Image (tube, rainbow, N blue to C red; front, side, top):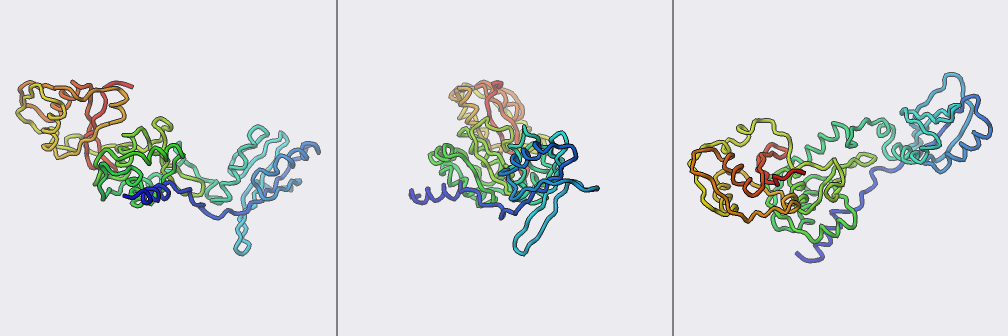
Length: 342
């Protein structure tokens, strides 16, 4: 691959997010309750200027008036008229239940931006802790369930993520420092055939990164690449299993005659792996973080037992553990990680 092509991949992969929608015009009509002093009205007139609304008007209220949002269509221009109430306690009551005082007025521009970009629907969304509704999260899951149809191992990581972008339609976002690191890295594992979510999570984790789907104001979902530990909302390497371990990967529980005498762990796994017909991936990040030496000899006494027990026994001799995991479509794989806690 030429340097020019690599640069083009980076620029496309981490392109600045396009504007979700054209911004709408928003006017703020503030109804003032009786009892507010002239000084307070003058102060609030000043405070509300340059807080995101295109125009602001304070006035006395009429009987029956209440907070609300009215959509106004003026030819090609769409605007919203926001009616709020400024109480005698100098609390500004907004249509969505949000309240602003002098202490949190710095948040008001963001409030108006939500309307400008996404209209009333954006304002009235009820996201969960990760910022997405259940329907939005399910849509992301559907996109990240698409299986990779290209090879990944030893490929430039930026190019691999670019292919994930093309497959899922989801853009990546990252800081300049992260982009600079990604440009220098290669994918460590072969994830062809696995769901895009599991694939990118494993490939990024190997280099100390996580990926966090985040819904931006207006509806666009971007995949934010962050350093390990920077967020609790990282996309996981696996999804919850819907079946028992025995049903998910029956071969793990097949009995065989076995005896392993002072054999390098890598060689032992190399002999067992093909029999399982199930991909094995190493948690490169955690293994390195815990300074685990995988170049050790392992043993297993002569016995008739099942594969899972054999793996547990020989891996623990290297302070490793194995878990049965599945990707977004339920495809199984074995995940070997550090057995150390923390």
